[in-house]
Length: 185
Image 1 (cartoon, rainbow, N blue to C red):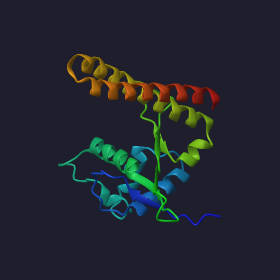
Image 2: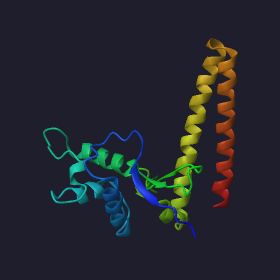
Image 3: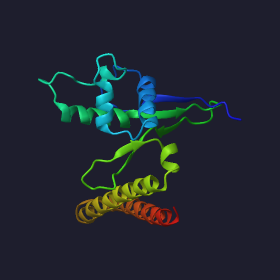
Image 4: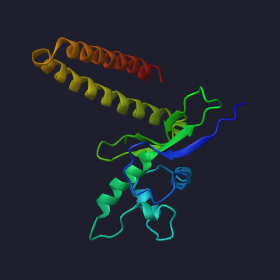
């Protein structure tokens, strides 16, 4: 039995208001997930009452920001929470995992939702949609890196081209591994 502590924290680089402790945000997101899918709109609606725990993480002055801005803030808040697994010894590294990840909608005109990996792992459809989204991002990164590599071959030293080639091959291998995972899941 492990005595690891799992602690909600803000992701490094989170540029939000930080007016609300990450533990409180995590608890509120858990409550939303217990009652359905987590969407940016549901987070904004839950935070709208002035006494709501997440209220002060949002800009409510309509002269400064409108509803679309708040939806962007909600997406940022959701993605900002990571769970830190504290190591049992000083030689073990801390482990970070996103508390909630994006699950694309079945309907391409909807933005999708967010869910914990525990929930996603129990739902084959959400699992497949999450993997397809990851696969799409890797394909996009691979295509972008290919363009940079083509440019570098003409304009950069061989050492840079070699490093870019290794990175491109790594993305290619990652994409192939995910293709197999998509078929297996």
